[in-house]
Length: 267
Figure 1 (cartoon, rainbow, N blue to C red):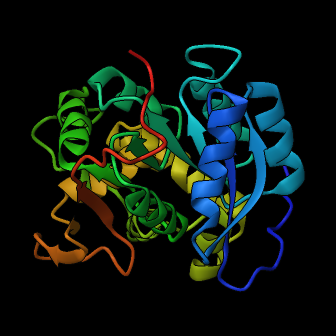
Figure 2: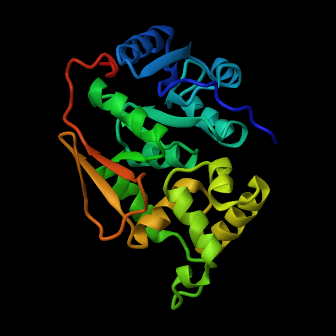
């Protein structure tokens, strides 16, 4: 399947805002539009309009509420569809709370970041920028959910064998490129391969290391003595001995913002 290239846009991130009601979506879009590095290319509030807008506008990022007007979990369905039909568009899932099941479902559906409504709007802009350059955005508790789940996954390889030993040099190069946030097209150009060959490598790698999504593969790279950057009060510091490149997973630690218009107004 061929996918259209993004419109040329000098460093500005094109964002589609899709929240649970028309008013919520408009508030989200207006809040994000205050950032000079973000261009709002669409506002949606149900699954059908969100999918149509992504296909027509080709945003870099979709800030997508798990709950849309047409259903409690429609945002997850949209994310799953985008993962297969629009792989160049990255999803930031907007959650009412960092509940374990919702966080895990968001990443299973292909989200590259999860963002709780209690966090600040400044943090949301940072989240969008981070996901845009290939990072995975989650706070320390959310990442712990992922790591715990990943650790409990049954291994495809013999338990006494390091799965990395079964990856060829070229497969290790592909894993490293995925961990750096590169798309299949970028990996192909970087390694001098075709996109079809990259896809074949990924199928084999998924089978060898026992994962089924790119996010899980990034976590595999992290648990293989790779680098995690911790964001705390705007500063990043490495807590692992070896970097995966210029793009890393960001673990965020943010205080609640009582003035955040994205917070749930229920109750």
